Picture 1 (cartoon, each protein chain N blue to C red):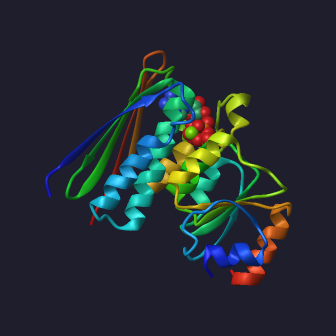
Picture 2: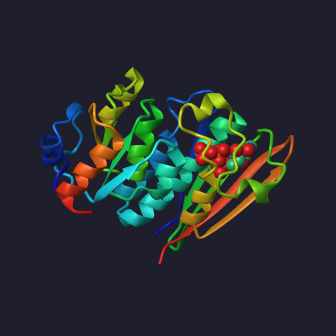
Length: 140
Length: 110
Ligand SMILES: Nc1ncnc2c1ncn2[C@@H]1O[C@H](COP(=O)(O)OP(=O)(O)OP(=O)(O)O)[C@@H](O)[C@H]1O
Ligand SMILES: [Mg+2]
């Protein structure tokens, strides 16, 4: 299979459309005939990354590369950045505002979910510049 | 047991018809969305009191079989609108989460 590239612009001001990129990815992976468990892991990881960009970083971009042996995600934003990535990766850690907590966000489980459902995750962040998240899900 | 049969047995009020023929694999109760994302299993009934639009995306991506709003909660208008494109059915009931979950256990045994 040739490598397939999908690009998504994530609107940082719109909670209503948050999740649409992940839904679109799910639709494409279904069409390509990927196993349900792979699709689920991709959809969850992408959603958590997407929603983090909406809640914490005022939007960004996602590029997905579907190769024969892995699916790679690159999520880039120019938000406030993360001062302590190790802390942010811990279950339950969240800086979410009360406003978004009222919507059900802020459990501090987004990054842990991304780690759990991918085979590799790298979070690169510079405070005041932005955050880049790279994830890979292997296909046997 | 299918979603439709379960809804009938529990006398749930249907707000949006999803795929009623889906098999119910179990049940997850929770309101924190990324908890649900991480812990609900494919085909589970999701019981929640959250009623905003983000419930639709989570239900779809976590691939639950249906959503039950407990304690008489009604969906926000934009959640209802979004459900048209989601497989999961949406129901509401005056019952609280514990009672719903307990009855589901009695019906499906898991
Ligand atoms: N793209 C980002 N830009 C800036 N900060 C981020 C970004 N992603 C995550 N963070 C920081 O890392 C913390 C933990 O993120 P995580 O996704 O695990 O939890 P959350 O988004 O706060 O809550 P949940 O995902 O459970 O709704 C966030 O509260 C935030 O401080
Ligand atoms: Mg998050």
